[in-house]
Image (cartoon, rainbow, N blue to C red):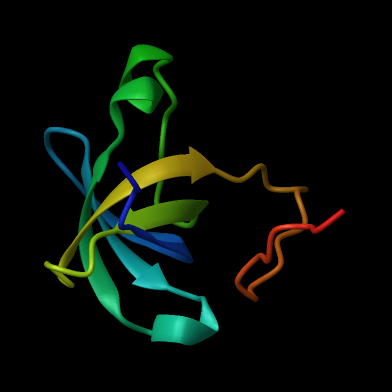
Length: 90
């Protein structure tokens, strides 16, 4: 079974109750598109806190382009590349 998701980089604009957020996309594939995202289960288990202004990695399905799932929060000193990452071939 293949995962049919689109991974994007975004910035959290606003927080809502129940670990949901409004995220503005920074990646070139969907620049300035806004998503309503929820926190992925693994991030809830490890109690990762998300605040407005945080840079995050978002997964979204091609079937609903208005919703997404936050899967990673970048550290403030961590460098991110906004191009889609290509897998390394050896």
